[in-house]
Amino acid sequence: MIWHYFPIGMRFPVNDFSDASRRDCWRIALSAIYASDPKGTFLYEACETFDPLSQSPVYTCIICYYGIVQSREAGKTMHSLDGLMTRLCLCNPLVQANYLEGFGPYPVLAEINSDGTLIANENGAAFLPVGQIEPMRPSDGWKLLLAPDSMKGVCSAERLTRALGIAAVDRGFRVRRMPVADGGEGTVCALVAGTDGRCETISCSDLNGTRVSMSVGIIPGPTAVIEVADAIGFSRKNEQTPPIERRTSFGVGQMILKTMDLGYRKIWIGLGGSLTADLGLGALAALGMRFYDTNSESVAPCPETLSEIVRIDREELDPRLTQTEITLLYDVSAPLLGENGALRVFGPQKGATEKQIAQWETEFERLSAMLGGDPAVKGSGAAGGLGFGLASIGGILTSGADKILDRVGLSFAMRDADFVITGEGSFDAQSIRFRKAPVAVMEMLLSNDRPGCLFVGKTGAVPDDLLRGYPKLRGIITCPIGDEPYEETIMRAFDRDVLPMIGKDVANSSD
Image (cartoon, rainbow, N blue to C red; front, side, top):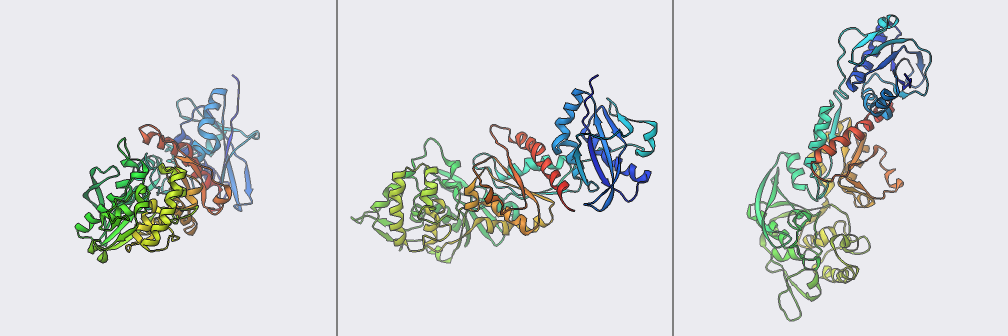
């Protein structure tokens, strides 16, 4: 036989070096070993040392695989803090877990044979625990908080937290699922789930002018919550969707009217995820505002007709708006105009050409002066200028992430967690620049002194200096989600990347 050693040392603090202490250390190690189900393993006597970091005596257990095949299999599940080592990192008595380049001539205490039974050598019997060893669940009692946003257009936050939660519970974690949003896709679901709210159904026009059913979230207050994305977002795009120059936010205005018809006078509107760029004039038209050209002919507002508008009439605005408190939840803090504004940053993503962007920017500047308001206000550029348009009739712009996270009590939930997982579909420098929901969660990690990680579908270029402001972030895990079923992909990523990251964090902690 060709021997190939793969020793792994595990160090445990002890009060003394008695046989009882040694048995306690081995009980922990064996529980983890059995949970990883290795075969053909030798257990070695440990050296007794003093650890200067923990200021305590330590007992080191050494396990060793033999044979090329066994060692390779061991490496797949146990090296680099996977498998056994992660389980040990989540066990409180551990000081550290090390892969050893070499080890001393320690006596063999026992062997785990091919059927998984423990055969103790005579000189090791006194140091090994007696009785049945129960496999260690990797994280009994450890509490995970799952607080991701949706993977836009692919996987909802609810579905993502469910898949991560199943993987975590199967591995012994205590899990709290709390999908979050920032005013974009998933806002209604996050607020309804986080406040024990409910949903009602209304009928409005979507991005294509088709009459469809849409959900209104009802949360304590009572407050109604609607999503712009539900009417004019990515999920409504199909072969019949008009080009951007003819798209309108008219359906959003209809949603507001229908919500007021239900009797609600507090309305939260999630602005994120739109595919329009009409300054919100379509929504204002549905609410009763009228637009006229030089011949006093009525103009149906959309990007290609903006230049025709020379007069705005507010007289027919629905009078209920004056008694309705409208809160506008922006997902991006972009202003209306300029290099960081609605058109120049997000226009290309929605299909606008450079020529169109330049033309519409001029019209936005002219028409915003007619509507009244400050185009430099944060969030006024959200949803292709819809934030500005609705603010011009009394809507209050506010950070969707801050409002939603506060309303669902995320900070309180975080204080009771040991590790936090947040994320979204695509994370890049814009996510930080415009302070998307995961970034707001990352900020809360520091204020609540909790470690966490990002779980994302893909990442763009994120300069290291941007991430230095989030010292509690342990890393970014990329999980590309393609075809169904998503759950299998997500659960594999949890095993491959999340579990080792948590274990490494615990191993490196000073607690």
